Image 1 (cartoon, rainbow, N blue to C red):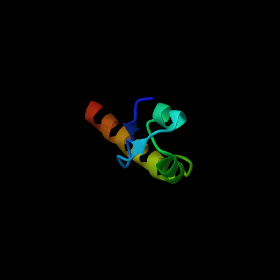
Image 2 (cartoon, rainbow, N blue to C red):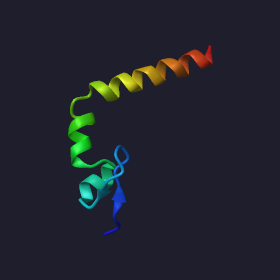
Image 3 (cartoon, rainbow, N blue to C red):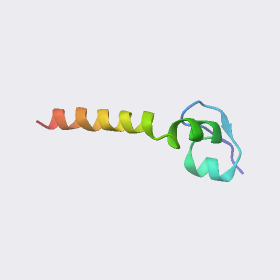
Length: 54
């Protein structure tokens, strides 16, 4: 199994599920399961993209 790194913190990933997600279990719980921080980031980048289209 090839070891990869978490896209959020850079830690090594060894669990197959984490490798497929591209994010380790700690960061998954911190950023994805809460939804709030990532949703705000997504909303801001979507709004910025829409402004550049105008």
